[in-house]
View 1 (cartoon, rainbow, N blue to C red):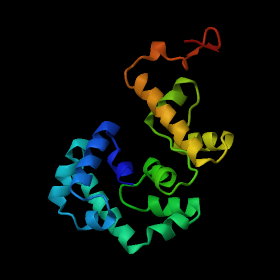
View 2 (tube, helix red, strand yellow; view 1 turned 180 degrees about the vertical axis):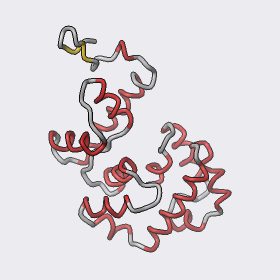
View 3 (cartoon, helix red, strand yellow; view 1 turned 135 degrees about the horizontal axis):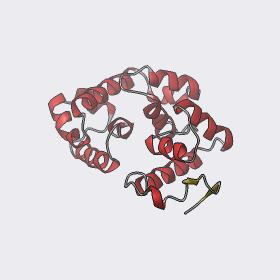
Amino acid sequence: MVGAFLTQRTKWSNVERAIYNLKQAGLLEPYDLARADIIELEEKIRCCGFYRQKAARLRNVSQFLIKNDINELFDLPTDQLRKVLLSLDGVGNETADSILLYAARKPKFVIDAYTMRIMACIGVEGNYRKLQELFESVLPPDVNMFKEYHALIVEYGKSYCGKKRCKECILIMDHRKGAIHG
């Protein structure tokens, strides 16, 4: 869950560094995060950017998890848990769905910036929910498959979209030929 908050608007390599810092300081569990000195917490996650905002959100969600049994929360039906998560400060669609998929192990497909960009490049337009519904309507609701599929999209996006290698992308539609080229 920590990773879902820290990855907002930053690279995963920065998140890994911040998680390492938190682990070294003994600040990865909700009770520890909830009681952490905010300045120390900010310093540990500074490498992720927006560190003040993220530190406050991490403390708030940790306090929420202390008040509400995480196992009971994760036992809620997916849609109900999603509504609870979305009610928390700093939790939007992608963060909620990342928590659902990776922490609660519920089959919810995560739509990230790479997914949006890749889908737009191949001519599939839509907002977060529309794209999510598309993926969930054609894939079986399998947690491990959703994780793998999402990881593959992220890796492909980092290799091509993140490096502006559009001309090498095998997914770009050649409109003159009406076929995918690569």
